[in-house]
Length: 306
Image (cartoon, rainbow, N blue to C red):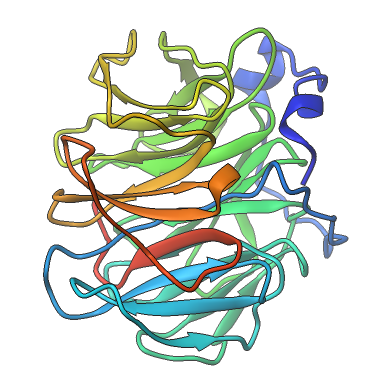
């Protein structure tokens, strides 16, 4: 993955932003090296319930599991994991891991520790993954500059839209897809109403220094990591401007997720190698997940918020 400073030198025109759509699939991608400054993560945990929190650690090529509520480490997954950037869980509890080392997304059945399916078509630099309520899988591709959609269990691209270096993707209850991307002079978020078909995107008014991961809460508020500003921002509909900050004192907030109950926010401050559990919406700290070397993503086993 390119350094986030040099990545802004990439030029993507407004025509590419609102147009670049393809329904064709590509050949296998070539793995790219991941710089220390531009890794991706998503983290989530269930409010006091049973279940696991899955945390990707790129230094050990593992997905470490933690117990919800107690936050104690319970095990790890290593099969199919290679320089993991981020992970996510669908409504059925299936786990998805975005690997930069092998340029793919690996799916694990609920509770499983061995890969059940690989998505790799038209991927060059998978940095994030999310899933909609129908089970469709979305890949954020930073170096490729696009977001890809796959039907669950199918390694064929359904739709591909190319706004620029994509870092985050989130989907609301109406199937609208929000994509965070970085171009000069300001990082932005584009909304594809109704999905990626046709790539009819609308650039939102809110702007950021360098956008990282994004998430949506149950009220359709966007939660946005602004890496260079060291802030986590709340952006309320119609997303014209930043409404307020969440928490404070972050150095490099990269990716974020919410638990399904909308009570816990999970944030990784990459510069500090910290996986933080925060109260939502206040942003006050609950704990730091321990025993991690270089966490790059995490999600809880009942994370689905659509």
